[in-house]
Amino acid sequence: MNQTDRATLARYVTNIDGDVFALKNLPEEVAAVLFAYYSRSTGGLRDNLLKLISGGELDIEANPAAEAQGDGALLEDAKAKAKAFHEKWVVGYGHSSVAEHAVIKLALENVSILASKLIEDSRLASYTEKSTRYVAFDPTKAHYPRNVMESPVAGAYREGIERLMGAYERLMPVVLEKVKQRTPIGEKQTPRAYEAACRSTACDTLRYLLPTASHTNIGITANARTLENMISKLLSSPLDEARDLGEAVKIEAQKLAPSLLKYAERSEYRAESFENLSRLSSSPIVASLGRNSAKLVAPYLSEDDALQLIALRAETGRDEADFIDNLLKNRGAHDAVPRDFERVFVTFEIVMDYGAFRDIQRHRLATLTTDRLTPDLGWESPRDLDDFGLRVSYEHLMEQSIKTYEKIAQAGFEDEAAYALPLAFRVRTLLTANLREMFHLIELRSSRQGHPSYRKIAQELWAELNSVYPAIAKHIRVNLRDYALTRPV
Image 1: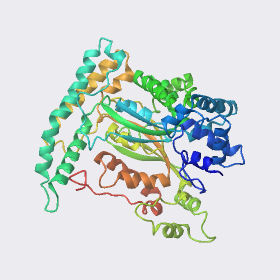
Image 2: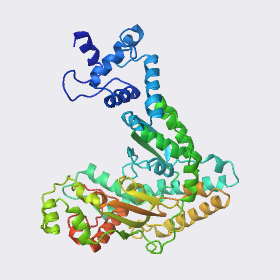
Image 3: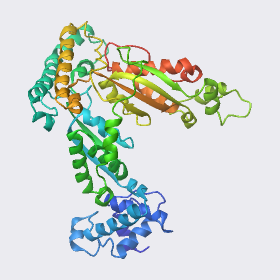
């Protein structure tokens, strides 16, 4: 390889000679093209990149304007040829996996919590969302759906949102002071850490009041194939906000990978599914308990069968429980259990407040099928209501929220009515996961720093597993303790 080629490659790869290198300064579509060549070419990626450049398909060097722009500048005709490649291989031959090599980062701001759950239902992506624990939400920022605000119930909707957000803002300093009175600063605590822990506890208490219309911010990293699926789901939603988000995501992501997302459209089948699958069949298992709870409804295997399935790699004749004990005894604090545990699946019915659902849904290796949010299952109350003297005012806010919901739903806006319900209201879901994911979910969500609401769910999940698979559940590092402050200091 001559020095000119080496200098050219240095712009686009992190090293010239090694077998492991990263790409840089290339549009996502071009990177996807280069990876796609692996399945059609005997040459390496750097060889194919040079061929594209020397053949004029990526004519960077010959164009002074592109040269002046510095590393990563590409001609429009090069992008057009990359699009043509994708039209041939992605569309013509069905190689949609090629689109997975185009990775796009998106920032979505001022999105309702309700819509954020639709977005995060696309499991093959990475999300970072505004925390209800570490950030006090702005009481002036909430979603006001166009169709509702153009209707006779606009005033009722606005009043309901402002009532909840106003109470959230008004009670924050009150609850913060009560938390401090109940839990004085310790000898080894710094004032800054103590203040942060108390504020987090106040935020955890008052997040129950936030309506699902509250604005949140989301950072998304996803490949183009996942984004195409996400966009289609959003465009097929009954919510105007979701459809608007689908259009906006498509427009912005197409600026980076236009040919990969051009076929992301509304699906009539998906739209019908939103309606047909909006309710789970009735079940008395936990929905009638009137509290956050979880129940194992489908242990597909007996414990003996589960142990045998997990221990398929054990020596012949070895006791399976003993094999699993030895397999897990040296597991480190951050080690996942082996993939052998993925062979056993369980299904739980869970009733939890929407705030807890907001966190549990993030376990994307689990399959969650969830009811539409309504007031039917009642609300959950923060544990400190009575100690803080807030029971009466809190319950009044919940009752008023139900009235607001009913006014909006009766006016023909059943989907939009959910915006007016605070995170305290319960939703029912079926969660199916393998045991490996259950280790992760229970250990993470029962941990010291977890919110009390989903810590309770994680603890119940463990208790249910322990009732049928004690030889396995004993290895799950569940935290069953309770704490005055919801954030460690």
